[in-house]
Image 1 (spheres, rainbow, N blue to C red):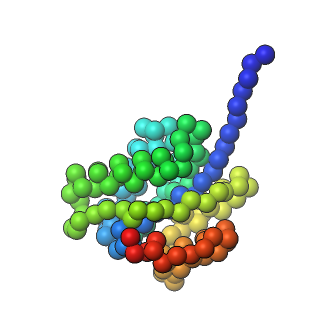
Image 2: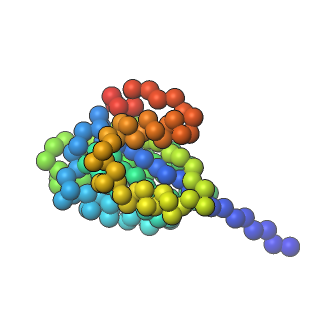
Length: 151
């Protein structure tokens, strides 16, 4: 008798730049996105969707059982931060904020989340990143603290 394990854990992983400053120019955003896809491929993390904005990133991943959420966030943030510093493609000092937001996604709404991620530029014409985070936290019944925007 063989034993099989199945898993699919969709996560919407979001993180921002330090103090959520708009340091990633439109010219650099595709390079950061490409690097995140490379990191995912290297770590065998299925990155379904990604959008890099001027001060934050949205990803939709299928988390493998071999990694914790914390490890995954550290890989994406740490490796991409080192890449940005090494390549020196930003006009300022760069680092990601300490924290991140991660939210479970049901298989039934994966396409809706992909559309949401792809429409970030349009979305942020009327809503700040702070307002977006506050809405996510409220939807998931989590308490908002201002500290996340000060780190």
